[in-house]
Image (cartoon, rainbow, N blue to C red; front, top):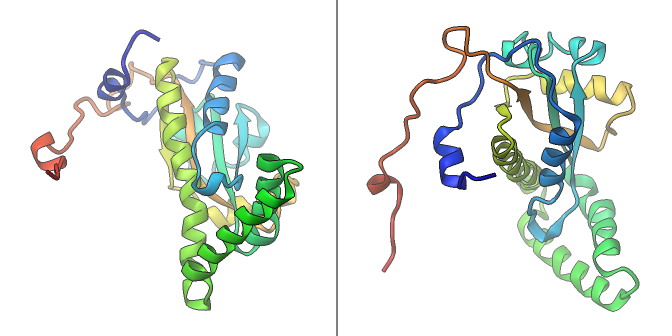
Length: 220
C-alpha cells in the first residue's frame, strides 16, 4: 500500500453497483476480516463477530431481506456484523474476554471485572437504561465497520456499509441456520466488490464533505 490513509479516504466512494463477474480473492477477504478482528473495542470487549458470505445460494436467498438492493445482490462478498445483546455482557461476554486477557491471573481478572461491573451498573443498571446498554454493545460493531472500510480501500476493494435491511428477519434466518444465537443481534453490514464503472451512478462522482474550517474545532 503506497497511498496514505488520507489519500485512500479522499478517493474512496461507496458502491451503488458492483461488477457482477468480479470475485474477491480469498487472501484479500481474509486480510479485511483480520483487520476487523483487530479493531479496538471498549474495555477490550469481545462482543462482536462477523458472518461472512460470498456469492452463492445462501446469500441469494437473503436478497428480499436486503430489499433487493443492487449493492447487496451484486456484491462479491458480504460481511454481517453481529454483537452480543446487553443481557449477556456481564455474565458471558466479559468473563470470556477477561479469561483471554489475564489467563491464569485470577486476581487481575477479578479486579478488572469488578471495575467493569461497577461502571456498567452505574451507566446501565436500571430498566430505563437497558436501551443505552444495547447501543453500547452495538457501537463496538460500528468501530469495527470503520476499520473494515479502510482495510478494503487499502486493498483496492470497493465497499458499501449497509443499514438498509430487515434486521429482525435476518436475525431469524441466521438463528435458524445456527449462525448466531438468540442472545446476539445484527448491527450493520458491509458489501464488498468492484464498482461497475460502465453503469451510470454506480458511485458518487464528487465527494462532498464539510469544510475543514467548520468541521475541526481546536481548543487552545
